[in-house]
Amino acid sequence: MDVKNLREKFSLTQQELADLCGVTLRTVQNWETGKPIPASMVKLLKVVEESREIISSGDASDNSVSVAAGKGSQVTLNPDTQRFFETLEKQQDIMSRQLEELAEMRRLTQKKDEQIDLLLKLIQQKQ
Image (cartoon, rainbow, N blue to C red; front, side, top):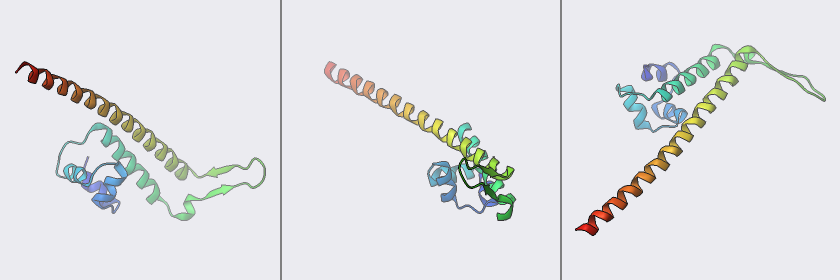
């Protein structure tokens, strides 16, 4: 995936893309210089690309929303607007899973650090 091309296609700064993906500016810079992109981030970047394409594919009149007034109101979205909201929901699901994975990684890292501390104490006691 050509991150720089994607970013420039939608007139995003590196910082704006970093914010959209929930990563640091340096991470985006690394991706643009060819550093590996985790599979989960590739999926997220594709979602960002899809949502940007949907937004830019039509003008304001194409993205209309009709609302029927009164009790039991119904909202009808045109297909492009509906796809946009579906894309946003997918992006939210991906980010939720990534946050869960990060929480698990932090827990495992903390456990590992505790074990290392314990081993260091045991080594010091034997000396």
